[in-house]
Length: 393
Image (cartoon, rainbow, N blue to C red; front, top):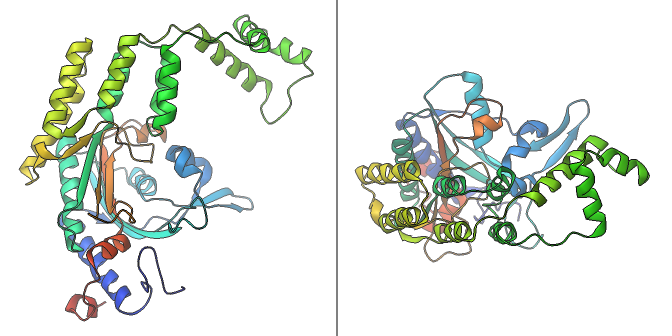
């Protein structure tokens, strides 16, 4: 129906719209009271600037339009990168921002029930102490959900920084380490790669052997010429670079079996955060790897959360938890509505210190999170539209 909106029947008119307006007003007031400056990023962005940073999943779901003379543009699929662009233009550290508005994502399968347009309200914090900022953003999301009547969300937390530290600590070819990092967000692909890297290299086909030998000897141009030249979108330099990468991978030593087992064991850690921290420390010691800085960040964050009234040690932790947005590289979390598997996470976020470097700047401390207000109202029940807050909207 034309009056419906994401997760919220009749959400564009009447009492449902008033309830939504009242809820978002309360949330934004809470964010601004925490020192966040409200910003309003553009809806359309240059595809060649930001789209690759989002990663494979969201890149494939972006709405892309062609603007003559301007190249491809895309509708923002979230707010984090557009807000980061505004922050970089302001050149102010530290800084806090909050936002409210629609985002757009193509959904696989026309009948899956997922909306292509929905609201996000959130905060982004730059340049502040990591543990304290992580804890504050988590607490802000918890309090924002309470504004919509969800006071005991189902929470899951993770820490990609620990997983990255384990990968960095074990011996393997840099290109293989980078490939595994790229696939944290795709567990099946990650496991397939790890199994391949830890096993014996399969015997190449005659054609592949010829390509690898040519790459090792710098003979790819001659090989391509003998095959009739390069056909397709890639030029000869691209083909030669890819062949060289394949040759280097074929020559790389396998990942040691004990290191592969350590990676598997670390990513399998699950349970209360205190116990998970202890288990990760135990695995690192037994495996002879140093991930002390990552574990120290983990512990400091738990302390900061406890100071904000969170039962930090009991928080559910899954080492393999990873948001679908590939720019996250540290603490991540999701908060879901109990008993509502039909709804997406009501709130989610995490740390993304490395994203500034991907956009051409130095790494900088950054953490943020968002709430889905429409899903929150659907989970908590519509507020009484006759209440003063709703009537005023």
